[in-house]
Image (cartoon, rainbow, N blue to C red; front, top):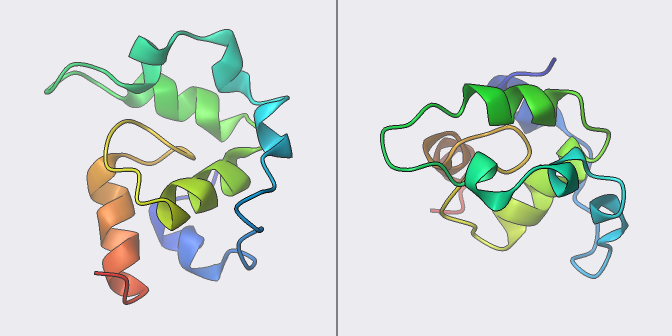
Length: 91
């Protein structure tokens, strides 16, 4: 399983129009409340599911490219994605 620091060495993001990763994404088998928990709730289960998903990297890059501010995307929380955007110079 990759950590948030591994994201800095990910391959270049796919074009935004390439959403094929969604077709087989494991998150499609869970409800949105799983990935958008109430404030202060655990994101552990969502992150574990993301860690087993083949579309995790594409999902994360999508979230970063589209400035998704809420929920778990690509196995990372809002704060973790914000940290990556800052490290990449996006904020």
